[in-house]
Image (cartoon, rainbow, N blue to C red; front, side, top):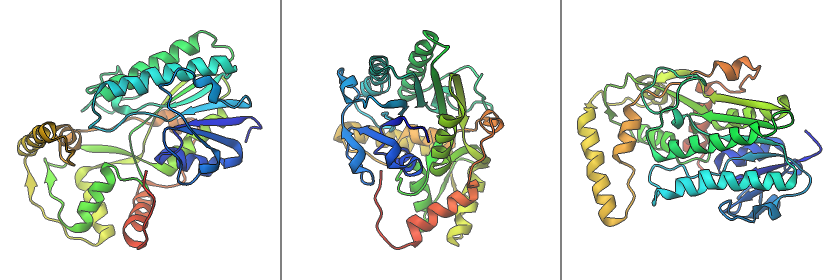
Length: 327
């Protein structure tokens, strides 16, 4: 690794923890709103929405990896997406200018493309359908503008990962696997829609790869691990790993969506958050498949196949019999 420090912003979370694991604590510092379970010694508590951010940057920093984001489906108020994802990015860039830092790796999202697109590559016209996707696209614009101010000596790498899963995460993929493990899973819709997915270990490795390979330039990459399963294929694969025979009964999309709207209404009235919502039903039944040939053509080779990654996650979360930290 480079002798200059790597500043991870948002490194206490799921991806950041794995990234620090592979980079090594001796090469990193971490700034986050919450303390790190695994890397407390190198973590400082700070919120990127605060304007005096530059005072938190180690003068030996050579590269910033910006992971911090509001990304859940149920963020309230929705202005938080823009306060953190857009204005937070603006504050980070100001701090980089103050510290003379010229390299940044930024995790955006395939949410900038919207739903049900035809395997979009990085040249596809963005069409975000929710506030999260809109805020990420606005942050990308800030980064491209910052790069254009001094393209000869600046590096901006924008990585647009699809849904990320793996050990210690309690996101949508974990919830899906838990339903399969219990034998209670019921398919919503026909299940023919394809889903691109990304394993956290491979995502962290790709970030490290970009950091080491590129010195200057503006680069945008989609990231997902292949092949893209249909929902039917994904459930069948998980069922085999759990040795579960699953019901062939299916819930029509319109009925599942109405159920999501009902829970949206209850959530609005009570303030409680539920695992079922209309937006989650739409995302579950949508095709979210993305072209990642640019990432693989760069020379990167993921360590784990998608099937291996699912197996590692299932073994760790459901069969090891010990409690684990979650992010």
